Length: 79
Image (cartoon, rainbow, N blue to C red; front, side, top):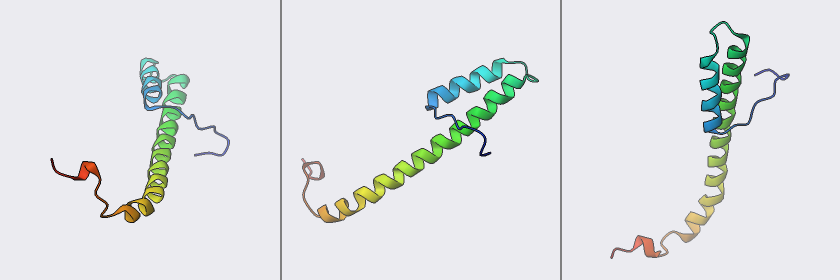
């Protein structure tokens, strides 16, 4: 990723729409290439953000889970 590019922060739906738009353009179109590249950058950003959020959630919940280990929650009990 180049430092002079702005990574588009999009949802999965928006990324799919961007790819769909790029596919409808003529193959040799500059617009098609730019939209395809932008969709790829957005997808990488989305995946990195999801991984970071998962790590942050794990880091937050890990101490709570070990503190409550063994505590009988209603969902853990058989009916």
